[in-house]
Length: 226
Image (cartoon, rainbow, N blue to C red; front, side, top):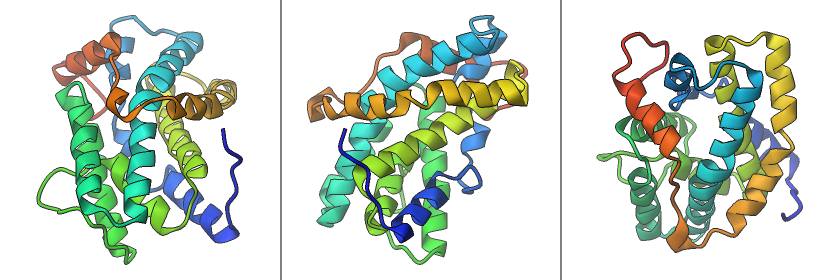
């Protein structure tokens, strides 16, 4: 993986983009984890770790990170057609209605936020917008390098997922911090793995994740959005 270098301003913007306080609603989605816990697939911190590791390497690194890189490259040269293709591909790669909603609802919220910050984005606002593509547009605008942006994107995803597990398993705050510490070293590995994904290989096939997400859509009692 390339060395991560940022200016102080870019680093601050990256921290802003990656913060759990960013009002895009990432905390509202469990991405199938709630169903997996309800069904007994996950019952402790170790199983949460295994679930997230599989999702990190075989879903996020296989889909989101390559799309983030393509979006940043397209934004750099202001190629609106390429950005639209990235947006369409990102949404098409979501295997369930819930996973697509996760991406598009966060994308809509991110778009409102960027407009409020004075950053115009080149995608039409009449259709669904992908969060990962808008994250890439914002990162490129603020001159954040891809490796740093990818690390920030992964951290935001991981922190939200561990927060969901903290409520659902449940985990204690100390266990949650231990879990974050255990999974942190895997983030650079995921970025390196994503570098090997060709454009026509973008997409994932985690059947368990898809089943859990689809099951969550009709789960009788749930804390997280579907």
